[in-house]
Amino acid sequence: MIATVKKSNARSSKIPVQGMMENVMEQFYSAADYIDLNNNIRKILAITNNEIVVKFPVRMDNGEVEIFTGYRVQHNNALGPYKGGLRYHPTVDIDAARALAMWMTWKTSLAGLPYGGAKGGIKLNPKLYSKNELERITRRFTYALADNIGPEHDIPAPDVNTNSQTMAWMSDTYMSTRPPAERSANQHVVTGKPAGSGGLEGRDRATGYGVFLTVKLQLEKRGETLEGKRFIVQGFGNVGYWAAHFMENEGAKMVAVQDAQTTLENQDGISVADLFQYTQSNANAIANFIPANEIATEDFFGVDCEVCIPAALGNQITQENADKIKAFVIAEGANGPTNGDAEKILENRGVTIIPDILCNSGGVTASYFEWLQNRNGELWQLDEVMEKLTKKLTESFEKVYKYSQEESISMRKAAFCIAIKRIEMAYTQRGIFP
Ligand code: GLU
Image (tube, rainbow, N blue to C red; front, side, top):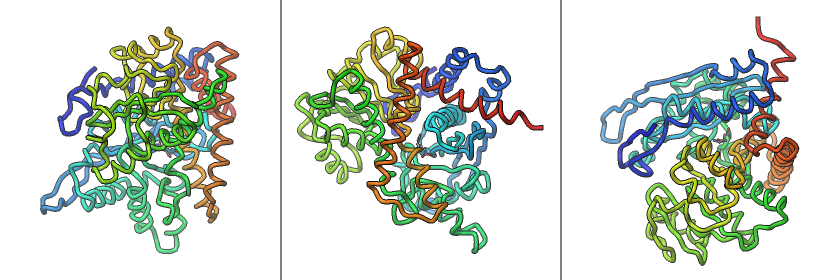
C-alpha cells in the first residue's frame, strides 16, 4: 500500500511505508518453511514481545508546547538484551518499528551477538526543529521510555537521522535519572555515543565499512575486484557516505548519488571526499554539487553501474523499478530496501542481493564492541576495532555464502535460516516458561 506524506517530509510524494511488515514476515516465513522451524517457536517469533508507545510534551523555541509520539518495539530477547536503533523520521509508526525490530533480531543472531532485536524512534522531520529543540525532544523521549530501556535490558543506537549527539543526550539523560553511585555503570544504555563520551573509535564508519567489505567479498567470489567498478548510492548519510568512501578508496567509482531531495549522476565519477566536504557547508544536502548532473528521482535506479547501494529507507526497490536496475550486486545498507516482488524479479535476472541483515551488520557489531568496552571499563583503539570488525563480518559473510551455495538458495534465505536456527536452538535448550 502507498501512503502519502507531507511534502516537506518526503523523499518523493509517494513513500510505500506499509510494505515493510509484509516484507519481513514473508522473508521470515519463507526461511522458517525451508528449515521446517518448530511450529511453537514460529508462533513466538512471528509476534513482538513488547510494544511501547509514548506521547510526550516538549517546549519549542517559540514557547509553544508540541506533543510527540515515540515508539520502541522489542521483538525478541531469546539471545540477550534487546538491541537496535532509534530513527527520527515522518515514516516512523508502529508497523515500521515492528518490522525493523524483527530485522534486528535476525541481524544480531546472524552476527553471533548476545542480543535480541528492537527498534523505535519518533515520528518527526528533524529538519523542522532547531538543535536545542532536538535536544529537548531526545531527552524527554528518553525520560518517557524510562526503564523500558537499560544497559542489560534494551540498548538503543543511532539509525536514520539520529547520530552520536543524539546518543550522548540519551545516555546523559538516562544516567542523570539513576542514583549517583550507579550513574557511570549505566553508560552502555546506548551505543553509538561520541568517542569522548564512552563511544567506540570507528563506530561512526562501521556500518558503511561493512557494506563495502561484503561487496568486496562478494566480488572476490566472482574472481573480481572493486577496481574500476561503478556504483550508485541512495542516501548520503552515515551509511551511504562511509560505504562510498571505502568503495572509492579501493578503486571503485561513484557514478550516481541520491539524497531526500536530489539525484546526481556523472559517469566520469563523483568524488566522495569532495561531495562530503560540500555537504558540510550545504545543510548536509548534495543539491547543486558540481561537477555532476541532476537527474530525475525515478531515474536513479536505472543508472548504468555494477553495484547498487540502497542506504536510505525501506521499500525503495520495488516491482516498479527492479527491471531498470543495471547493477549485478545490490548491497543493502538500508534495512528492508528491497520488497518481495522486486526480489523475485532480481533473482530471476541473476542479480545478487547482499541482504541487509548481513550487509549492514557492521553497525550493530561495533555497537557490541562499544557495549563491551563500557562494561569492562576499557578504551579500544581504532585499528583494533577495525581488525575485529573485519574478522567478524568476514566470518558471517563466509557462513552465509557457503550455506547459500550448498543449498542453492539466495543469500537472503541463507542468512535468515542461519539466524533463525540459532534462536530455535536457544528455545529448544531452555523451553518455554513456566
Ligand atoms: N541502527 C543500526 C541498525 O539498523 C544499528 C543498531 C545498533 O547498533 O544497535 O543495525
